[in-house]
Image 1 (cartoon, rainbow, N blue to C red):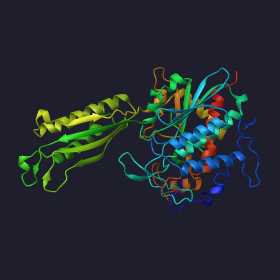
Image 2: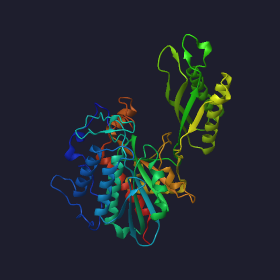
Image 3: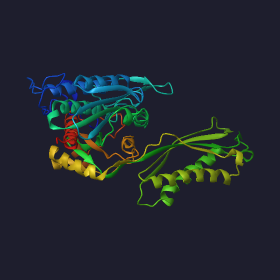
Image 4: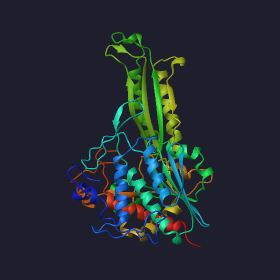
Length: 453
């Protein structure tokens, strides 16, 4: 990831994007490809292959639940090296299975969808894709959350693990998941029978590109990693009329303003200060003309926490405050506001402590302990949480793969540059070390969790 005026020459050379990739250890021959060999320009065949694949994903992003071509490419790559591949699982979901004797089952997940963002990185391989969103509007599309890295790293790990079958034993289940950005893909795949039609995992592991850690490193948190997410829609009703005669109306815009302020007291006055919690009013719409008092206002909220208890308290308090504000304004019982929690709940992502602590040691051996960093949990959401929260609580963990040019990262620590965040139109991970580290980490996790007996 680079600030706009901090791009390095390696970013501007499409042919050399991953020239710095170290040779991937790949033991025996791949089912559909020969072993990586040293090319004249210093790149391995495998590095060149992953470079081209990353460029394809980056330049061909697709919106949530529309990842048709991305899913086809992921499926094609995994099938080519000998995995048993199923498509159309929960929409565009891809499931690839490789059975390698008796032993545990490990699920590795990569999400595939992109965001409605116009890329502004200035890179020669920047996305120029546009698409229609659900509202019929034409929007730019960009992998502003690093899912292009995720797909490529999954394929890279799959290829290496296929080549190194003598070094592990058990079953690999690789998942290309649609619609993470709208928190619907994991739910759709599980509902479609992911754990019934395919081997149920003993462990689930995922990676995510980081916009705040240096490339070449991985970062982890133990226990809570990402927040639960609820979206709440509120309709506040009023009695409309002429703006010159407010005494003959019940102004829903005034009520909405009171509600917005009152909602802030939930986190500040009802929740233990030691418990992280967020209530954000992200959208508010009411009225059409200056001299007309409207009949309703619509609001949309995001509600986030790590604790189910805190989540329940916030949702109940939101309804109480909204209803109480309307009652205080004299609204009749048949005109009370509607408070609707969308059926899209994403639980908080819990990194199972024993598994996470174990993998921290594994990553330290594979990457060097100095490249494995403890980090704080974040209030963003991730529907990877759903893979572990089944009836028998599958141990799962998600880790961050640093994507920031190390020199730019050091400048950010000195306050000289500001790093673009995930979802920013300027976010661009440094592909070579980011991919190399992601593949190494996934392979190291698999070799350790699927030991030869």
